[in-house]
Every structure is written in structure tokens, then in C-alpha cells.
Image (cartoon, rainbow, N blue to C red; front, top):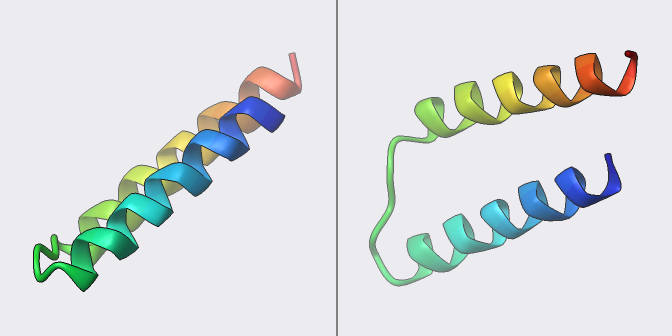
Length: 47
């Protein structure tokens, strides 16, 4: 899971950089995607 956490943190950093450059995206969509990815990671961890 540590690798996935690093990947998610990278995605967050990219998003923050994008916002700083004025290239924001729909935050709700991002959080829905992150939530789904975290859920998937938890399921894999519990196998």
C-alpha cells in the first residue's frame, strides 16, 4: 500500500501545481476517483 500512497500523494501534488498554473479541474470528480482508488487499495490489502 505504501507505493499506492506515494502515487496518490503525487497526484495530489500535480493537482495543486495545476491549480497554481490556473489549470484547475473539477474537484468533485477528483475526490470521487481518489476515494475509489483508496477503496480498491484497501480491498487488495485485506486479501
